[in-house]
Image 1 (tube, rainbow, N blue to C red):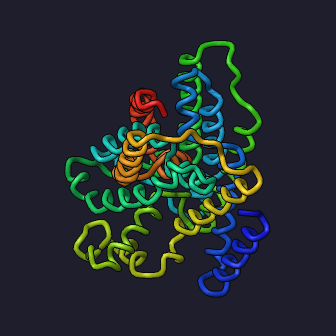
Image 2: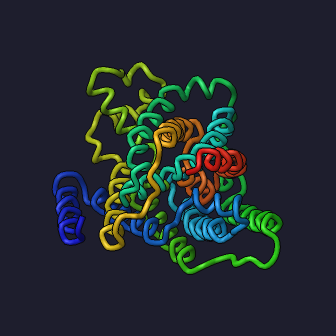
Length: 358
């Protein structure tokens, strides 16, 4: 798609949101477009950064992600302490989280994308990610439907660093854990490595700024996978296949409201649409990404991984964005539990990916 008609389409959608929905939703669309442009333009792949570290001892991607977490935390934690109407991305430490994070880390390497990665690569026309997107949505929906059963296996109350330690204490603990992360990465890769390149720096800065704008506009941190599950939930409900009132997750007041009202009122949906638009904008200039043709077995394995990616994202209370970026930057313990478990899954996932010759 050429940039002029794409710009006209995005502008028309922006005006429609202003007139028919709300100025806030229109502003969030622009935030999402910026996110898509940053993700695609900087090739800021959370999955790729982890795989480069595991396979090539290349720390650049992970260092860029640590920079993003530091900048986002530096903005989000004081804002949460100052404005009570803003909410942190808190998730309960639970068996569900432990299983979901591990499976997510494994399958994201096979599917070559987390939540945001699947979105922006689909927007750039990568065939596997385009095929995975609807299955990711279906998996996310089914994971939310089954979430109460997983939580029944064991959970404790969410732990927020700001509540326990105050803003200063939460910042100190977060930066201490980020420093420890870099020390562990240093031990993994050894000496003589280049730690950062420009694209990871500007991508981290741009995403931190945009994540902060998302927090201020939406009142909640940046998320991706909730929107996916909502899309599949609305389709299932419209077809008479699902009754939200009979489900523990979707009968909760906020969730039942979102599934009943237009999808354009959902903040995650709007930023997700924006991410697709921003990635399309980058792709319109750069052209379609060259991709290796996949055989039938690779397609089947990749699509199954995409479904499990969506399912596990709900069990883990988010993906690399919702659990890691938003969880850690808003001081949630569950974000720090998610990272090592997802990384352990990725250690296996890269081997599976190599076995099937992706």
